[in-house]
Image 1: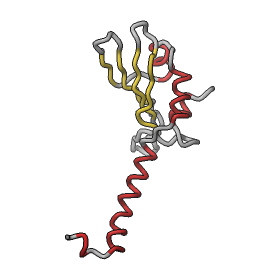
Image 2: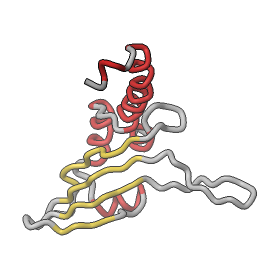
Image 3: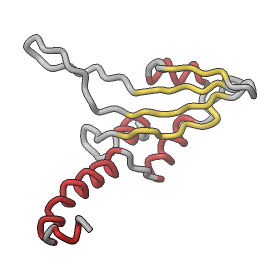
Image 4: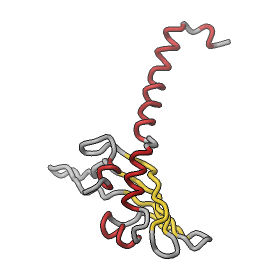
Length: 130
């Protein structure tokens, strides 16, 4: 086989960048139950209009067959860099929000949770107790 001809140290060196990339994905796409609990405490049961007024508007809206509505929501990115180049702040939190027929949030699943300003979770910073 082809791999048998490649020395072990070379194969190990080639695998290292792949392992680092996978570790980075685990950090960006983390599934943290504690963060999800913080989001749930803040959002579940809240009127959808109140949520969007307080935390910013949705990005995408889908009407579902069971008369619920699913929203894709990403936190506002208002910080900008100086001196002409406009760059959005990349510290974001993305949720998949399902709103029941009564207009209240039934679920608010964390889809993407970037590094926060002062912690490892932007979602926890946004939805933590104020």
